[in-house]
Length: 397
Image (cartoon, rainbow, N blue to C red):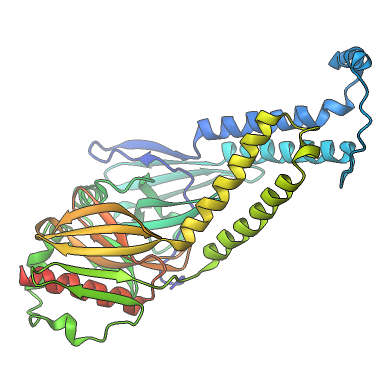
């Protein structure tokens, strides 16, 4: 799949190229406010690390410490205060260097009526510049990039000009919000008069830009599928299907599937959970080094990381087909959270998409205003069965 679906690196988390008036120019770069906050945090860690090495004349602390009562409590530590200070300084310096590295890397994109001109600015390397005729681009591709941001994982939705050479693929729109995604994709494709491209379980799929606005009900009608065709297929054992006499149907995924990011969540649960237990057992000793209020904040952070990772592992999908609409819930234990509602008549696409960066498949139910993802990490055969049931519901309505 990686060979037929090249995925270049884009820097932004929020990027938009205004294609309505050409020529136009935009800069693809990492968020400057985030980099500034990271640099300030790194600088703070460096100052904390240097604290023990600064002279009393600079710190102004030595005279105060002479007047403080001396403690007779013997404190055991795994590492010396000097080594801990060095570690803090190195971590802070690493964060500052990383922020500087991302600050110096950006991409300028200039498009006129005939050509695409791109300059990729790099650090410690010569800038890369190229100019490519617009007609050499195959189409406007929509894809989802899964990325890890610390312990948090997010989806980055990318619309880009697709070229067979991955280095010449340029971004048009990047965001972490999926609202209006289909409409924006269609607008870019129709403005440039190029096909719309997605990455499916079978590879690259191309659609004529004039077809992107057709209701999905019209598309599946042209397939002339027999009624109740979906139920002739074998249902995967990890999916529960229930149908009521009122016509409501429920699809529930019962099994938890694991991938590399799932094992990362397990690692966070084990490590941070162990730290939390250790800190709780040694609370009295730790309070001699860290103020109680700050320690409570650290406890809360560790507990939040553990709970977030645990919920990320336990989450399961429930799909309700009722009253000419689809309702998607995320189930965590006894708790159900509604994720989205889409009317059947508003659906513009039901596609099994592939995320190369995470090697995951998922089912995307798309309208002009909203996009709902179902079955993240689910095998392809399970997604095909769910899609068939939804299509069968559309035909029946």
